[in-house]
Image (cartoon, rainbow, N blue to C red):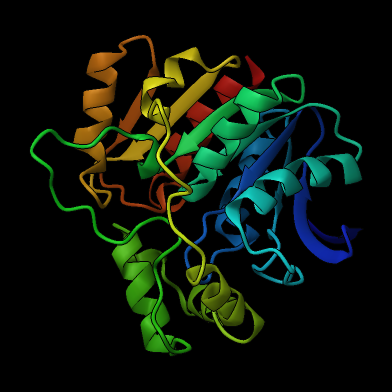
Length: 271
């Protein structure tokens, strides 16, 4: 795995890359501390499937510069700018958490640029439970009003992981480092923005079966926000969807179920 930097839209952007072949862009979520490093254990195995696996720190995250525009819409548009900067005319998108909806939106609007889409643990593209239910923090809202301590960073990781043994001292220090300083400032700026972006005439979950590119959906059975139940409802409504629920797996499914995630994703992206 190689760490690189590229200058795009006036920003210095960090990315991790491994392998050759069809490009797969891995997009991290928006919780405080998120960065390309959430894919670190997946890049090599995906590369061995014959993929050019690339994960980048989105603007305002990780070691990438903070942008002037903190909106989701800007980060979604920036994905195509990143692809252009690396000379990728067409590639697949793997979106974790909030980034899953970003990937779906791009595929609807730019199917000429997007080959396939994988949604990983994205609650915002699932239907609500008929009786309501506990939703918890929205995607990108995890974080407090003050800069997190090391203990805060551990608590957030424990909330998102089924297997707490994965939280090594190195992992904890890196996650905490990505949660403070300019990244905490960016989190605060994102927190000021209006949520939801208005009511869609047709909810995104009712349109997923019409996505113009192949779609794979992966969720952890123990994920927050009743994700497994809601995913099952979606599959019942649209049985043609390619949906997988992974056991002993919470929100960071690419960690808890790394082997299953890579197996499903590698086969899907290279088929």
